[in-house]
Amino acid sequence: MHGIFASWRAALLYLLAWLMLGLLLAAMLAVGGAGWGASLVFAVPLVYVYAFATGFSAYYVCRAYPLDRRRPLAIAAGVGMPAACVAALWCAMGAAWNSLLAALAPGEYVPVASGPVLASMFGLGVILYGLAAAVHYLLIESERVRQLETQRLQMKLTAQDAELRMLRAQVDPHFLFNSLNSISALTSLDPAGARDMTVQLAEFFRLTLSLRADSMVTLARELQLVRHFVAIEQVRFGDRLRFEAVIDPAAAACLLPPMLLQPLVENAIKHGIGQMIDAGLVRVEAVRAGSLLRIRVENDVDPDSAGDGTNHVHGTGLGLDNVRQRLATACGHEAGARWARRDNRFIVELALPAVTADAPQSITESEGA
Amino acid sequence: MRVIIVDDEPLARAVLREHLGSQADVEIVGECANGFEAVKAIAELAPDLAFLDIQMPRLDGFEVVELAGAKTHYVFVTAYDQFALRAFDVHALDYLLKPFTRERLAQALAHARARLAAPAPAGQGEAAMRALVSDVQARHQPLERVLIRDGARVQVLPVARIEYVEAQDDYVAFYADGRTWLKNQRMAELESQLDPRAFLRVHRSYIVNLGAIARIEPVGKDGHCAVLKSGARVPISRSGYQKVRDLLR
Image 1 (cartoon, rainbow over the protein chains, first blue to last red):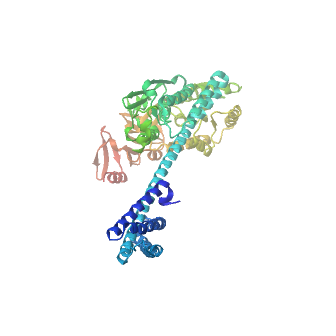
Image 2 (image 1 turned 120 degrees about the vertical axis):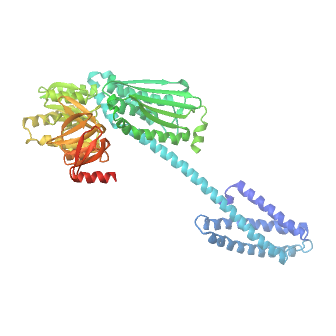
Image 3 (image 1 turned 180 degrees about the vertical axis):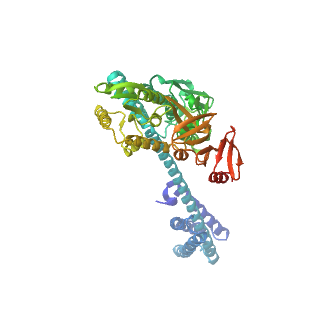
């Protein structure tokens, strides 16, 4: 079905509205001097016939003259012409019905239709047709808005999913191949170590594969991923890479978009520790401050690159911008990311609304905002 | 065959050491964990062959080659670098992809032995290596730092500190912080690597850092020279003066 008749409730409301109109017409006739009974018998069936006639025809007329693609004059003509025709037909039916009633019950029925009555019926018919058309236009319009909204949501989800897929794939190929090379070395030097490392690698990839773009993860879970990653990198870098995570228990339960922390730690290792000759520390700190979750990732930087610290920022800028963008998509303007080099440390700070799984309200809300 | 291994990862060195240990004619004369050590070791030990990791702190593999020279035969070792692989293929250079098999390593060694036994026509290998290095440098333009080898030591000179550069025969002389450093490089090549917004070739033999200029002074009838903040005076040729004027306009 279509238009107003698409749902029972809408159809009932529609018929009820027309019943009111029928009663109104009957009242007008009765006030004009005709008897109440005759007026009702005359007006109500006629009005219902007209309800169906306009209900269907106006729908098709509205579809044929879409508001956004036709010029106003064309629409006015397109609706006006059928309105006049249908109203004229209705008047003819009115006259016929009047005669029929008079013929069927000559004694009881006092004819109510006269020239002036039929003329005002014609006017009323045109107006009602116009109203029906307006209602249809409204329905079509709201349907279109709803579809656009669904489409937009669908697209957003698809985009998020694609983004996560990209991030997963973005796990540096160097990381994978270097890790495999480490395993290759360990197989003869330290077979147990080789086995541990394959397990770590497997765990890391299993965790990244279990992520879904549309659902947030707890900081604790993201940290699990990070720890696997760091464990693997520590096999490669040996004593050069030190790692420390200080997580406030209240912060660990907070939710964040998946794969947000991992790229930051990966950057810290690759561009920070990887460029240092001496050992360096990567430190992750998270606290919950009221309604905010604050995360801080800092790493040592090669002191000799102090002169052109741009080198460091240059290499990581892309990854950091990506993190900032993902934060903005997931949490809106409440979230933020900033980074700076202070002395021989590179510091990235994230702030996002603290949401836990028990109170999952604000994710979708803030998305809509 | 005297070999050195250069890689910042202990395990990566261990794999090479293990595989090379089984080769009777191979003697490992050194292991280095970073580019600086590598430049020093190659200069001092003059090995026949170097296994060189590309991604290393401070100096990458290409910079090591640039500084240590192409007398040594290099086999590059990398995990993943599409750009480098293309460059190796273009210049017919040997490389190993991590992780590699014993057979692949043996193949690279055989290749190296053949080269050592019958050296290529003078300078051919060296030319290929130089071409590779300049290819790689072209990717990192504009230049952010100049690497200069001073015996076994490596000097890293951020370009912002350079006041001016003077051509001296086959060398270019960098003037910075009241000192001079010589590097074997051609002037035109250097000019193309520097950021044209910061450095200007004002004379056939001079490139000047625009930020270091204090004023321009007329010299003689219609010559000019740049007086730098440090007090040094750099001659400006007629066409150089034109360029300065265009830039200041």
